[in-house]
Image 1 (cartoon, rainbow, N blue to C red):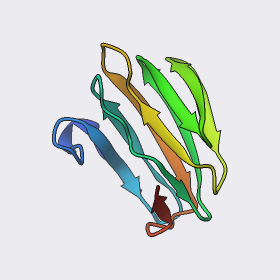
Image 2 (cartoon, rainbow, N blue to C red; image 1 turned 30 degrees about the vertical axis):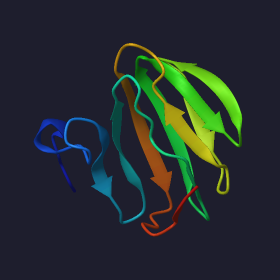
Image 3 (spheres, rainbow, N blue to C red; image 1 turned 180 degrees about the horizontal axis):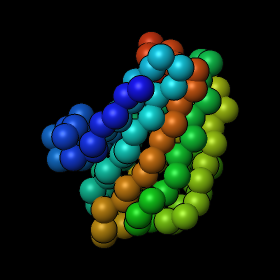
Image 4 (cartoon, helix red, strand yellow; image 1 turned 180 degrees about the vertical axis):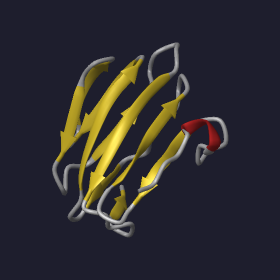
Length: 111
């Protein structure tokens, strides 16, 4: 059994970006905070499926060059090979929950 408190963990970018709550052994999951004007960064995965839940705010998902408006309460599932990015094009923070499975830490390909 593992137990964490999100407040004890740091975002990759300091005060925003990706924050992993759990990494492996079978899934990755955590939170993403994007400030206005920030983006996750375009990428895809060779084998990993990735799901996002918009917990707060609104922004835009870019999936295989299609732009999709996203708001709190919506969820998006990416198949392996789906090129995706998330852009906070609003004037308020965008907070998401993500889950990636299976646990393959070297599976990401930046585009």
